[in-house]
Image (cartoon, rainbow, N blue to C red):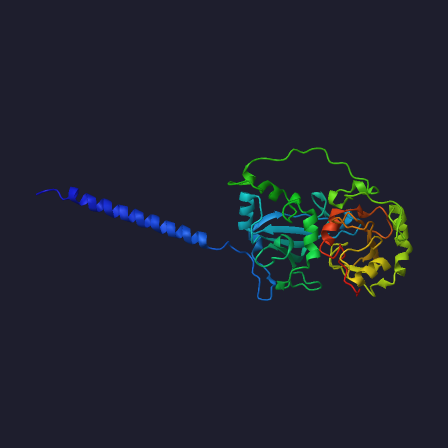
Length: 387
């Protein structure tokens, strides 16, 4: 009797080949199916265009916790609380692989007030209680008209211990403009987050496993606050020559302008708001009270509907604390006939009503100011007729 095994070998080999082909086919189909799936989303926009409050974000990638305490900002910090920042894990991996933010990126900012300033380890700033929640999203699908397709939200409910279930996007000039002017990477302040800096374009693997640290050098010298050219961030320095003297009755010299503002001469402008309103932009802080005054030149130009305002146009904005105390001024004066992306405007902001050295910006062509005001008609964002 002949051995049947040799004769069955072709059948066995065929069966194995068929199994392998089927396996590869299934893997291929699975890969095609995976490629066809849309990118994973970690947020939901409802039918009203509002962002639903995300949960489980503490399972995401923790980015860092900056704080700018009142104690270091003359009691007037725009954001005196701690900001615990988290990013969805898929966007973090994309950032790590590509060094760019993907469509659908979401970052969550958890607000925590400053609690104790002393611990057994020594003096410092220690976290207190949760006081708010904010988010920012990059989505061309949902925000095609926003700069960089980024939108900003707050779930904080002032005076209430419950966070809001949904939030609508802030107006463009409230957040986008500042991020556009000062953020290092596509509207994100990566310069303040070493976790993101280390991960940018790192590729495969883990940045934290690389075993690298930055060399610690000498601290930079503190700038002279009395010298506008010594401001820390170049985006708040003048980028064009600043005229000397007086333009349409408004002095451009640092000491003379502060004295003019303290005298209240601008309050004689016929066109002024009847009362304060919540600021839409970052003057002192979003939502704090401000009041706008227009000189005759800019009022006449706005009435005429001009797309570019004449030399001598001027706007003064009073900035108040949450308690209603005058806390400084913002001023813009047109010093030449053409705007030239903000270089034709003189910009000034002082965050104190008693100290002329508390300057946030001063000079012609201040990029930070022009970026924000660039969304208005010839740099003017104030509603007209005035409220």
